[in-house]
Length: 384
Ligand code: UDP
Image (cartoon, rainbow, N blue to C red; front, side):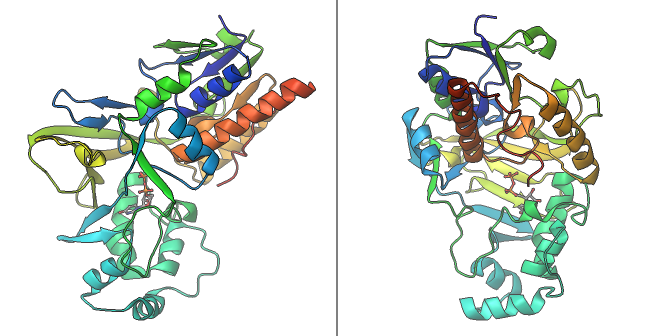
């Protein structure tokens, strides 16, 4: 091992911690099992020139100024406003649910106030604090919109009924009574001009950072490190001793065609009898480029096995009980800090991942300076 500090995972989490430590004069070795950096945010140009989000669509959006300034140091972020359409029951609608969706779906011409009153009349007002995904939908949009846009998609995406999923998953999406159809509310929304991988490469490009790709790290092999930052799956660190934590993985059916396939970057397919959840047309993520050819991904979700790339932590009751066992074991461990989507088993967006990695590095540097013990977690994995 060339650095006294070992960082496992060369996605945003690992790269940001390595960089912050390097800038404070601390060397590290960053390992990743894959042959590329950037984790699931990895991008690659197809031979026809289209920039492909290899592991599915990644749109950068944030309201954290520190994160926005940070990412802009390492590459050019171009403004990009994400808009999604949905096919449901043979018609195309605007998403997230907004005044256009409501008027299209119910074939009405409601004003914002009328739509709000109309949806309130559809909603289940007997639900206090929503616990499940279905409660959340029934409380905020009512049954018809829930069944058209959320029920089938969610069943396909998560492989279980929305009655079993936490409300927090749906709370990711806004419901609006205006024609604003931006998918995200955040003030900063952008995509890197040349994709995410060069940004992560730039973060890692420092003389005190040694990057080793294509290396699967056995925790025992790095046990002599002064400290380990683990952004791999938390259950992998413990050799899955409390059982394997459940993840969803994605399969992409790629097609390369001429012209414009669907006229938008992402079309969701909300009906349960369509096997895929969405189709991504990658060139629409780079409206500043022009391509005659196109690359599309049909996206299928399924349970992740040991051979697959994990994407989404499932976090149902069973997984949360298992997670608690891992978290308790992790809290008792010394010399290791868990971070990132896999390390803390949370559904984190890229900006939150960067924010938390900066906080992990801040904490480490502070502990280092004051001779305090570095905690196993800086963000609580038992949170939402
Ligand atoms: N969702 C849905 N219908 C849609 C889009 C999203 O039911 O048309 C639900 C689904 O459960 C999904 C969640 O909302 O997992 C979050 O959606 P988001 O677009 O944030 O998912 P991501 O892009 O992270 O996969």
